[in-house]
Image (cartoon, rainbow, N blue to C red; front, side):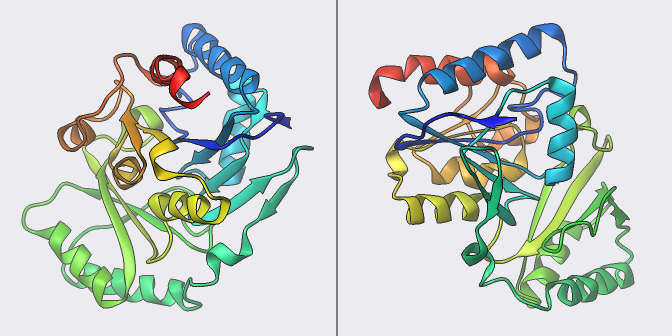
Length: 266
């Protein structure tokens, strides 16, 4: 699969699952994705694209095949923004080694200590499928429980200097119903951090940067950029926190914004 041909000075960041990629893959949804791809390719000399996703590269490849996508973006921040890749013009990948230099070598040991203490407090963690396949993220499900368990998780993570994101699961994206995603990752990683790093190192202006997402783990990224939007199919939890939202879902919503703002950044 090829990358969008050229690259411009306006950065467009997309959460992947249930934002850029609709898990249902209906004909109508995929037709909208094709239209979005056409738009991004047509103006690739003005736009730089980036997928910022909780999915691993392996998972991305499977979903790309399902949707028959035609283009890689210019950059991918996979595994919840803990792995940052540059996609070359020929479709090959190169990892941004400098991005990970500040990550602690003992990250896994820190998370293991956190998990041990969580279990002692009788907070039930359930490993997510594929947990441990990435070196820089550990993901669990927690079913809603009585008490201040969220505060306890944040406190334990702070003690180990590990970041944790807790957000309501989205069953549309294949998560458990009535549960929470709990993701541990290095302090200087994550979706917002990956976007911040790219803006700083590639000289993208914050006010000219766009981001689109659908859930709680996108909110910091949306707040950081100059133009952050939830798509209308976003989770109710995310909508309660971030008010800027598209009128339409998925790729239709993204196109709605980009086409409307077209004159401001082309």
